[in-house]
Image (spheres, rainbow, N blue to C red):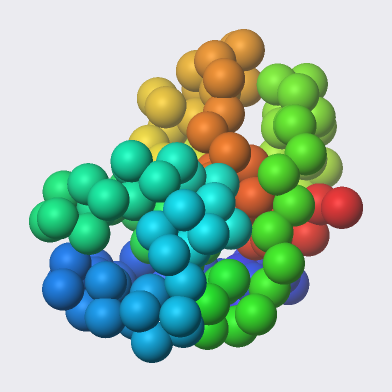
Length: 130
């Protein structure tokens, strides 16, 4: 459990071949497998071909395909992100590290940079945002 009592993500690295094998075992094509994670089919294809998978996507893979958590991709405003972080009493470094993002990256999201769909879903899971 994370310090706030929600789910704690695992950022363990995937081996590209194992990821493709896992998808095939689930009998899902690339589009369906990756769309459930907020990733495009072409992005997923690159990940399966040994491209580095962002930490937040690796964590989301585990939540969705291991723990059967249904991701919520609804937008999160910069104001809402900052409110949640302050409400639970975490500084930017700790809040963003829990979802695999650097403090400086998190600061940019809190100041209006667009959040990737997969990261929105992971933040909602880890911090229990409905």
